[in-house]
Length: 628
Image 1 (tube, helix red, strand yellow):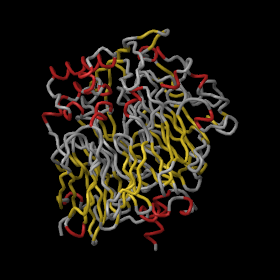
Image 2 (cartoon, rainbow, N blue to C red; image 1 turned 60 degrees about the vertical axis):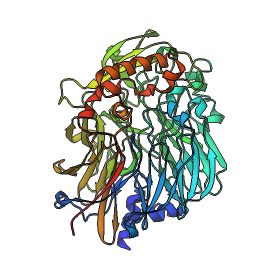
Image 3 (cartoon, one colour; image 1 turned 30 degrees about the vertical axis):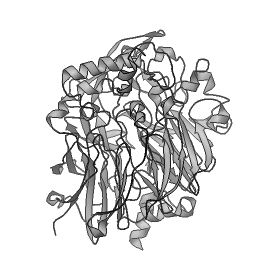
Image 4 (cartoon, one colour; image 1 turned 90 degrees about the vertical axis):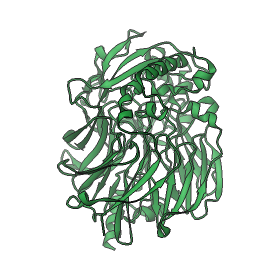
C-alpha cells in the first residue's frame, strides 16, 4: 500500500488529486512502478521511476539482457510500453506495432502493419519518426504518419475503430504520441512547414467520434477561447486576439502545429501543450505577433475551452517551435507553495509558470550560447512584460525586409527539440537533453500552395563558437532558481529522452549510440554502452519477477540524424541536398525532386555529417539488467 500511494503521488504530482478525475485505467497502470504504461511515465511528464534496484553504486554492472530488431531503418523516437507481461513496441513509418510476451522470452503475440500510402513520407518533417503508443481502457492508440488514429485491442491487436485526423495532401501528418484523458484521447497535428493550421482534437475513446477541436489560430469560436475568461499573463485575452495579430487571412495558413508532448493535472483538470512555428519561416511575409503560434496553452479536457495562454516567441523569426514538453511539479517560489509547470523551449529559454493561473515566474537561458535575445522582460508593470528582447544583430527581419543573418544561437532545431526532460522529486532538478548549435539564416519570398513546402528560408548549422566544440550538452537545471547545476558536454546533440530513477541515476542516449548513466546529484558518468545505432529514443524502465530492466530504442535519425538516415553523409551530397531543398522550398524544384526532399531538414545535414564516422542505420531495442 505504501508503494502504491507513493506511486500515485509521483504520477500525479498534485496534492490531494482524485484519480477518478482522470482516466482510471491510465492511473491504475501508471501507478504501478513495475510498468511503463505511458510515454512520459505519467500525466505530469516527469519521466521518473520509483524503481531503485539499479542505483548509482551498482549501475556500472549493467549487462545486455535481451534485444529485439524492429526491422525498420530510419529514426526511432519514443519508447515501448510495458503493461503486465506485455511489451508494446512501435516503429517509424510504416508504424508497425509488435506485442511481445515477456513471460515467453519476448515471443511476438501479435503485430499490426498499417497500410499507408508511402507518398506521406514526402511531406513528413524531419524524418519518418513516431514518438510512440498510448494505452487506456484495454486499448492501444496508434496515431499513424498519415494522421489515421487507430484503437487496437491490447490483447489481440484487433482494430476497434479508426478515424482520419488530417489530410496529408495538404501537408498534415503526424509524428507525435497521443494523450488519453478521462473518456477522450487528445491528438495533435504536424505540418508547420506546409502552412497547415495547427489544432488539438479530442476523440471519444469508446468509438472514435469527434468530441471537440481547438485551432491554434483564428477566431475565438474556432480556437475555443472566451475573450473574457481566457487569460494571458493574468489579463483577459480580448476578442479575436489571434485575428488582429495576422495580416489579412494569413492565420488560415499560419502554422502553430501541435506535434509535441501533452501533460495533464487531474486536480486542476487542465491539459497543457505548446504550439509550433508560424508559417512561413520568412518573418517579413507575416507582420504581427502571429498569435497563437509559439504558445503554451492550458485547456479543459472535457470541452477544449482555454483557461490561459502564454506566447513565448511573438513573431518568431527563427523557427523556434514551442511544442516541447510541459513538466508538472510542485515547488516553493518566493515563499509560496505553488503548482508549477516547467517548459524548456526551443528558443533557448527555460520557463517556470504557475500552472493554475499561467503566471510567469522564471524565464532564463539554459545555454549560455543563446544570443538572439538579451532575456525576457520580467517586470509585471512593464508594457513588454513576458516578451523576449530581440538583439537586432540576430534578427532575420529588418524594417520589413529579408535579412541574411549569421551566427544566430540557437539554430532552428533549438537549444532542445522534442527529446523530453526528466524530473526527480528527490533532487528537485530537471535533466535536460540539449543542442549546442548555432546557424546562419537566409530568408526568401515563398508563395503558398496546398501540400507544397512553405518554408522560405535556407539554413546552415554548426557548433556554438567559443565553447567545447561539440553540438550538445546534457544538463541538470534548477527550475526554481533558473540556473544550471551541472552540464556534460557531448560531441553531438543529445537527442534522447532522459530517465530519472529513485536509485539516484539518470539515463540518456547519444547520437553516436551510447546509453549513458550519470549520478543524479553530480553528473558523474557511471556507465555507458554502445548500442548498434545512434539513439534518439527515450530511456524507460520496468520490473519483472523481482528484476529491474532498463531499455532503449536505438536507430539514428530525426532532424539531427536525417542526413545519415537519408543516406546523405558526404559533404558534396549534403551541399547538393541543401541546394535542392532550397529550390523545393521556393517552389522551383522539379516535382520528383521536391517529393524526395524533407525541407525542414535544411542546414542539419552538413552540420551532422560526422555522425557517419560513429554509427550506422538500425532499428533495435536493447534491454539491460544487473547480473544474477
